[in-house]
Length: 286
Image (tube, rainbow, N blue to C red; front, top):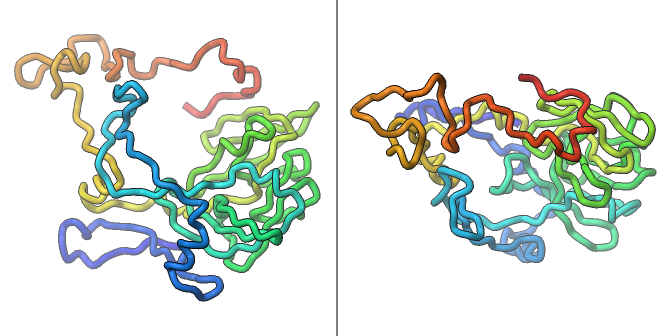
């Protein structure tokens, strides 16, 4: 998988770098696109846009809105409820709701599910989950059955809840220790923490590792993704931001800069009595 570079025929494509989608063009059994959509209709649903608002209509995520319509793909983050049932990789697909590719799995019992696609998974390959599954990229096992030093993704924090950690494109964690019913992980952020060794994780690095190197090329492409422009706090009114107000380009009026929520930059906001603090060996790199 690589990035596609365009001829500089305009300012919008001069610096444009986007995935070439070569992996996604390798098809499984030949069939029409209309038939493929019909087969996976139960795995897709439309979701209403919230444009960054919560159930009270208040903005909780700033600079969101607009963008192309999306259809949500239901991803199987759990994997543990299909123990011992082999599944074939039917196709690799683009998902507008995440930055890694997804794989359509057809199990021997006839059920179809989407999973997060590992980096080296191929159409026509096979995946399986369970404690007896072979140590192979794409398979899902409890952490206690995974060898030390393995790269993993889609890691559960609570047994049976489904994967919550390490789900972004190109990311992977490393299993570094096993001790007293716990498994030690080194996460992509650099944080090291304990997780119950009964929790499931999938083997391998996630797909689309070049995502971090792509470039939109123009502001319009970012708007298609539902991202609005960020504006500075100094350009706002005092009621909207602590930096706002004044005549022309005014200073902050304080010893240091503040966030939009009135907190000093760099202030730790994690709860000191958070229950999971006891499982953290060392925090992420500063």
